[in-house]
Image 1: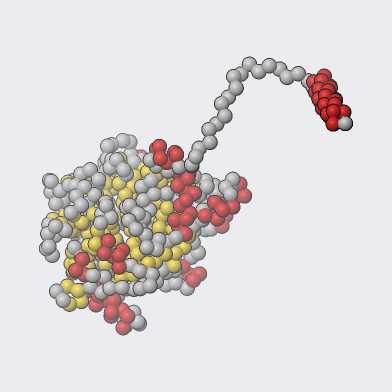
Image 2 (image 1 turned 120 degrees about the vertical axis):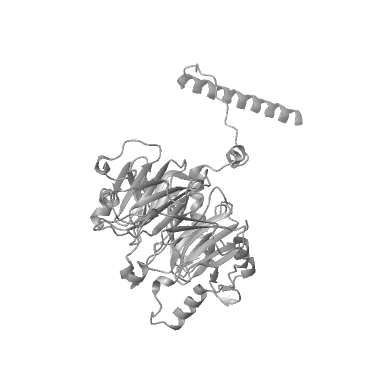
Length: 499
């Protein structure tokens, strides 16, 4: 019986195998034969065990990847510390301290408004020290690490440790601008629109007197009287510690060679007497950009070159600009902007070159607008137009007493600028690509980015405790220090960032 069962099972297996063979034969009969391939088979791509291999090989992020991450950085900024200028000199309150108290007591505005507020701040190359000047005439060199370590979310307003100050002087005159010497980090220079002198201090010496004083040349009017010149902005070159550049209220850029004389060795002219509010040397220190109160941007080439015919004049001493651009005319070329706004010439408060993209020249206007001029193609590529100050009931007359000074962050083409109408700063994405939300060719419906990336790429407003007049960005970690209209320093950063 068992033997018969085994025979039946064996026979069934043979029949099953035969049926499978018949099926395969029939399938082969009806299949179309494929052409033989002449190409050698490609090896299968090897899967990367991690996505950081490019970073580990090149030692840097891809710019677009950095731009994608910049949205997280922009959203993380907040005020982490505030330090009012309650400082002392020889045990007594300094003049800025006194003016702030008087302003708080005399709320009716009896104290002149020009005598209040921090007018400029600047970091040294390594971000170790921060220098600030006030409208009341105080020059202070702060230890940034002390400021940062005292900042704490739980204590929003602190008193700075004055013993950590490298320098604190009262210069008995209004101060409007201060800069570190890029080629000699022991020197700071400051000046005022009410003075034709540049005061240079060496922070290695504890002295209330400057180590050097530079002056502009005297100029006479047609009636023989001396023409008053105040100085609006200062710039140093990164390669020569003896060269200093300053723009004045008479439309001239003065260049000194400190080895030769305390008077300028060269004057760059605009062909106009309009005030040059701001100047910016290019990275190779051979070209200089300037922007005026009447809304023009100029470029001078120190190496020579053909000047614009409109400014060629044999009777006028000085070097005319290579290029002169009217910013309002360039803004009118942006169709979407012209359709929504009445574009008129406006005062330019500041211009700054992007440290991570040297052909982007940022500008900031008196009405709060900011943008970017592509200096290679001479066209405006980015624009940010916040609501006008009058819409929020802000005091326009008081705000016009300050030249707002924005600052680029060290990477990712992010621009930080104080608001003209609110207490806070705008952090703007000026990435040199149409993916930037401020780009004039930006199209929301054509973006190929994911919804998450799209939400990250937007301009951010960071509310602060006081109105901002000037900003400086730490050259290494991007922490923003803002000077205010009430003479405070605000530290704006990611909470408890280490550096």
